[in-house]
Image (cartoon, rainbow, N blue to C red; front, side, top):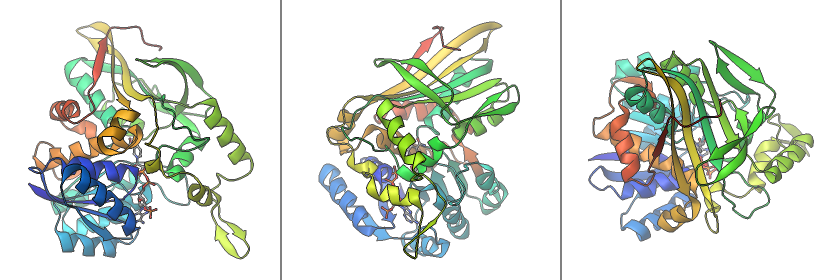
Length: 400
Ligand SMILES: NC(=O)c1ccc[n+]([C@@H]2O[C@H](COP(=O)([O-])OP(=O)(O)OC[C@H]3O[C@@H](n4cnc5c(N)ncnc54)[C@H](OP(=O)(O)O)[C@@H]3O)[C@@H](O)[C@H]2O)c1
């Protein structure tokens, strides 16, 4: 049993807090801290009502390592679960180093003034974490996160050599709003509006944003137009599984969403360059975020499912094999369970499981790691136990 500090009281933070509270024999004391304390208190109220467990709340500006250090010293957690924004990854890792506290996140660092997410900044902490005798687990949401565990599981149980990997991410849900993003709008729009990129024959191929797309069939959902994006797990998976010849990431978007996005882009509302507005510096995308619905507020009346998985082709026993492993998650079911929507749920549950793996010493070694570097089996068992059951299809025709 260990203390845990969750930083970030958004859609994902709420799911992590609720799911940790259900495991009293693993998480002895839960502290939830964020920039706006009232959001932590609302979540604490819901956790108390749904699980009977009291969690502690705190205000913190996680851009400031000294504040995080003070918070860690106050509560003495075994690990910090960082589900604030990618900008806070490095300051929180610095605070963990100073206090010798383990670390976990769900999205890799990106600088605020440049929409460019890469692992190089966090991988550069590896030696320092090793020397301090602490562990950082990077990208432990669904994608990145479960997609890496799925790939490691496929590698362990189904292939001698993985050659082709397509990660396919569909949200076939309808929240009834004209335009909203399912996780932090600023991070989401930065991700989608940058150039697409995929790995082929040892190098990255860059393409214009959303320029490559095709209909992909999703289980229990049907065909949905899916767009090629760069996604951070492609960087770690191609490094950790060097036999991969091609790795791509696909995500579905509805026409209504894309039309709104195009208009917002055309009028400059998705820009991250500050403008002067009546003597005040305003970042258009940050302003847009303030207008859009909070991702955590979308759960009510959200209908339909998400379906995220890995479609893999490779060699086993000298023969070609295909393998598709996926999870489908129902928005209405997770709202019923903990008042969340499926995108936050599919991120928060794996973060809780990653923390559990570390506390149980099943995934624990000093240094900085991605999820696919550990034994996938105990994590896969817990996905089935804690709300994200997975399915597999072997030797079906894949759209390569
Ligand atoms: N791997 C995956 O599958 C996956 C999927 C979805 C999301 N994610 C990641 O999960 C994270 C959370 O997403 P979300 O949808 O929950 O976002 P969200 O609803 O916008 O919540 C983010 C929370 O972080 C807090 N925060 C922001 N800056 C902070 C700071 N300097 N100090 C302390 N707290 C701060 C925010 O506080 P305020 O309310 O005061 O702004 C907010 O409560 C993001 O990093 C996102 O990229 C990962």
